[in-house]
Amino acid sequence: MDVHENRFVRSAPRNEAGQRLRGAIGGDSVTPLIGVFDMFSASVAARHYDGLFVSGFGFAASYYGLPDIGFIAWPDMVGFVQRLRLAFPRHHLLVDIDDGYVDPEVACHVVEHLEAIGASGVVIEDQERPRRCGHVDGKRILPLEEYLEKLRLVLRTRRDLVVVARTDATDEREIVRRAEALAATDADVILVDGVRSAAWIRKVHAVTGGKPLLFNQIAGGRSPRFSLSDLAALGVGVAIYSTPCLFAAQAAMDRALARLKEEDGRLPQVADGTVGVADCLALLERNLSRHHPRAHG
Image (spheres, rainbow, N blue to C red):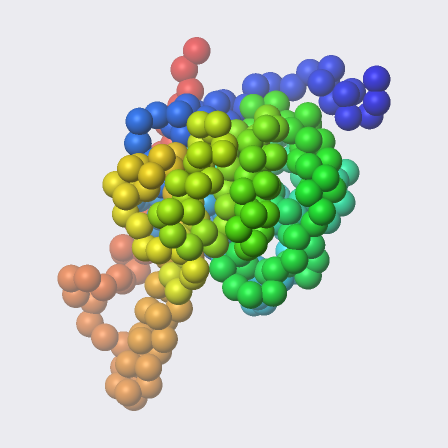
């Protein structure tokens, strides 16, 4: 028995969060997961949706003030997810772990951490470093067998955590080859990032043997702006929205500060459609543990 097989004999609690997300993905409708970049954006998103996506793009922007090209250190991401789970005990939390932080052993270690703190699932990609956002130029991908070795180790490490296998291939033949190979593993969901048409979603669906597909939407990105109804008709099971909170925050802050400058530093009146101190505190107080539902049994 090797070091990876030893993980199976450890006594560990079942991951209810992973089971709940897997059940949602297996349902009749598309499961939407909203990208969040910090605790405050998650507090707003959690009022509207049951599922959150811990976006690498958003976290790199928020935590480091840097583009999403490989700066994220895995302990920072694990710490963020732990805070999210404490504040949002019943929400789905799908976590972007990029390439597993390069090394397969690190990828497995991170997966164990995330499962232990109650993450619902992870997305692991086949990019080489320096990595790029899936919707920009300059991506390079690992040899397929090298990625599959890393993916299989992650799959043998997880217990109930949902694993999304992601390819960033752009060549059409390579997309099909990789989608088929990923579907042949025990990965729960397949993501071809930056897919550019409904026709290509159908092609991927045709070679993945009915395994659920994930569609990633980002404003200004490569993929069409599909509705959830559109995606359901195409056989997609999960939709992640990586950046709506981040981009909305950037635009809103720009407007608010430009107005403050124009008004000679005089704050606007709090009125309908705006937020004052009472509204902000009411939002944050919902995250206190005394407001969380208690498990029974």
